[in-house]
Length: 136
Image 1: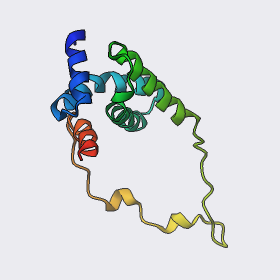
Image 2: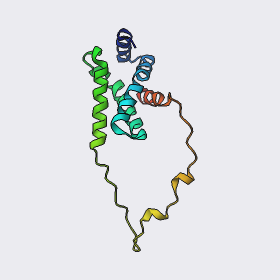
Image 3: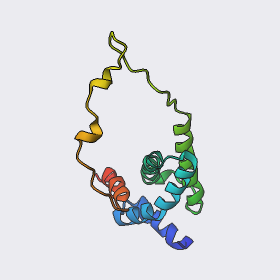
Image 4: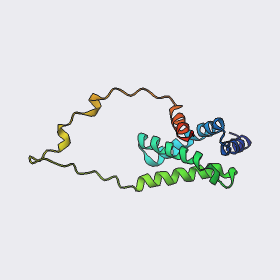
């Protein structure tokens, strides 16, 4: 995207123009996801982090001091979010056991077998979720 169009999108997004915000999210989402996936390695974690970054991008756009530095600013938000996720302790939790030494969750049905399959999502779903969270 050319710089002038990007700067116009940023200006309109700051004015709470939802069409501009949607286009800005659409413009940034591939780049954000790519960097999240590169840092976090796992697709689901990268997907979740991308949503967090895109939401932070739109909600804190007023904090961007120099609109011409937009991509560096977004990359910084992305790196910060991913570093936070990587530094968070992801230790495996010890499951409580009964008197016989069996984990209490062993007796629970496998949720994957009882839940209906999830509907397929299109590429617009992350954008819709992000914009839905921004709506007043």
